[in-house]
Image (cartoon, rainbow, N blue to C red):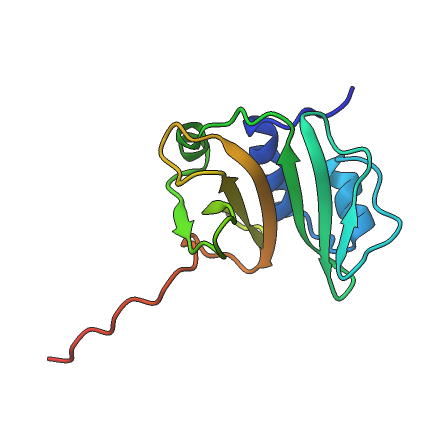
Length: 160
């Protein structure tokens, strides 16, 4: 049965990416069951074709021959920001990368004792409110675990 990409699947994939010790792209793609691993990568990106059900595009990002990220573009946006925050916790709005670029919100997934954490970065066509629909998502894996999504450093406190 084909894998349908929905909120439950995104949560499962993000937690699996935290636990999975493999960094070799073929092993990661097989463990996630997103489809056939790309035969070639151009500048660290390989396209999984056909993409999972419910998506129009699925790309695998690599760095130094190791798995880095999985990016999916939804055929029909169905996941609202409110539902994403119920499943992932509060997100952190990221700086927009330029006019016409999507608005992004990052959610950190941490599994106790896992060797990795996973950022789920949701893209929105408009400035996101609770009803805004996710148009695309990237699951980025990081070695080490931190429950806080990285953001600007807090201002230093005065010494008393």
